[in-house]
Structures are given as C-alpha cells and as structure tokens.
Length: 154
Image 1 (cartoon, rainbow, N blue to C red):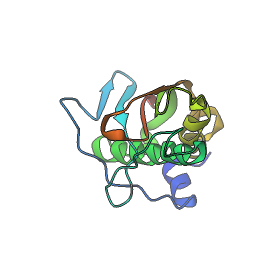
Image 2 (cartoon, rainbow, N blue to C red):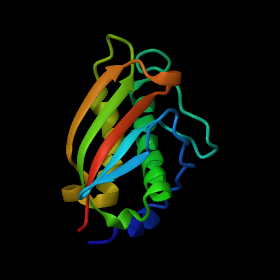
Image 3 (cartoon, rainbow, N blue to C red):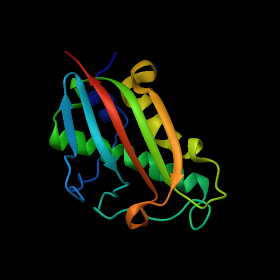
C-alpha cells in the first residue's frame, strides 16, 4: 500500500496553513500510541475561514466541501505540530460538528466530505474509523468543526 504522503502527492492536494490555537489547548497531543487532534475548522489556502450555516446560507454540498477542507486543515495541523503523516497507522474516532439550522438533518452526509478524504489518503481499511456527526452552533460561524483520534505505528 502507498504511504499517506505519496497518496497526497498523487491526489495533488494543497494544504492550507495550520491555524494557531484559538484558546488554551494543544492542537495535537500524543498519548501512548494515539494522536489526538483538537477541533479544526475549514481554513482556506489564503488562511481565511470558511463560514456559514447549513440550511441557511450553505447547502448540503457546500457544507460537505467545508468538511473536506477541515480534513486538509487537520492534515496541515498534524504535519506542522507532529510530523509526517506516514507515522499514522489508522483513523480511530471522528467527531464532526456541523454549523446548521435546527431543521437541517444531513450532518452525516456533510461529514462524509472529511471521511471520504481520509479514506482516500489512508485507504479504506485504515482511513475510516468510528464517527459521530452532529449539528450545533460553532464559534466564529465556521461551517464545520472536526476533532479526531488516530492510532500511530509503533
């Protein structure tokens, strides 16, 4: 199987800048054999944030693209604060939060934007973990926020 870094090259993916912490926390933390990644928002290549609310000024496909962008932001944060993506064995757990109206019910579809990207990079077996997808109000009106746990190679 091709390494995650090679897959990223093959997919011609561009990573946005890793955002600085927005509070008192670590962007990534290694505990034992696990890499915990704090909640990430969708950062564009120019460093700006993708904002909006699904069911209001974003449709489900725009929100799904924002979730994919969160994936790219998370990969940037991991490489900036931890190192090579090739040290990651598999995705373990994802918490996807969608900024949405109370009547919007397609949060799982939206978070698929993130999950599909991880499967493309880490493979179907290792890129898909357990997951929750919920709707809520998010800081700064960002469209999506996602936190994740990865298992590292020993």
